[in-house]
Image 1: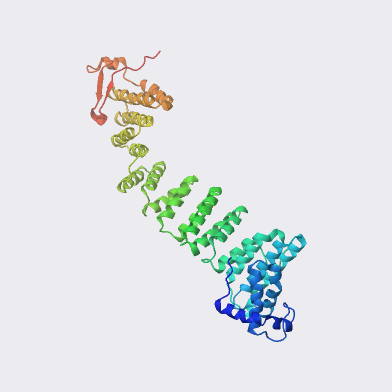
Image 2: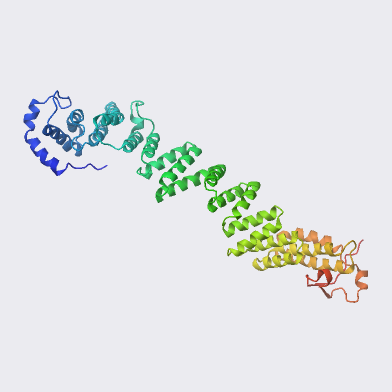
Length: 452
């Protein structure tokens, strides 16, 4: 901290005081001793000037006796502030730095600590102006620098972080961010995650408009939440309780529930979130959740809302919409969505599988109790889709082959083909009749494998 030079008025007073120096010294008691009578202003200024000139040049030994005299006889000279008490601490720190023996160094620091802990009470008694938070901060800095060099515990000194916290509580907007960071770091290093979160919340409420501090708080939270995801959830739950209409907080809590696999809580929160203005991406996630919950209509409504908000659905979104329609029995609309998914994503084998399954399901819906030849013919189209699936995506070949094996067994037989004038093995045939008119697929006539 830079030292302020004496004012012009003080300098002029000091000139006069120096002229009387020899006379005053001849009649004055030892410098550090209190006088029986009140020293006059010139005498006070003379001792002040003598110590200050030496002090500012780091000549601490020469400055000491006059500074101690000032503290004893005129502690507030010249401006009734805490400069002299600050400087006596700095003086003994300087003497410690200049000491050549460890014993002397420790003794000087112990003396500095004594002045540090007693200064506030003395200034209160003497009516000297000071800022309490700065003295708490000063204690913290002193401990940070000299904790291992003191002879032992000093009454009135706790830990550096404890004093920084007191300084923050006294003046939250004035304390430099460095000290706030030291408090947060101490909690993290000691694995006091909840204490760190609590203090971060306090800092945000009292200093949230400070960009540097806000970034610091955000960084600490991310650090804590990375180590303990449950802490993130607990924090967000509390924040949502205090700000129930915050879309951002609701979204963050929803995402946290999802990341932790807490589907029940995420699903419960989704209904509340949908009443606000969530992002299209969040709506997508809610739609998928509704589908997994067995609520296809709610899933489709969510997707519709996402599109209304300007979202561009991806291949997976259309696949999910197809699944929703399939669950609702709307097979034609389901196929439309699967086809859109195929258009958006090359090699989307699952979508081909899904269309094949639609055709197989259509047979179940349309055939009644007994399958006719026209019903069996639909399996040709289904198997075509399964074959396309493994052609574009070899990773699902085993799934496709299993379905092909199953449905080939229920193809029309050779006898069925013989009795149909419009069927001839290897020729094309279109599935576009009756209950299957929506399919409109052209396939190839072939018979079921011969048994045995």
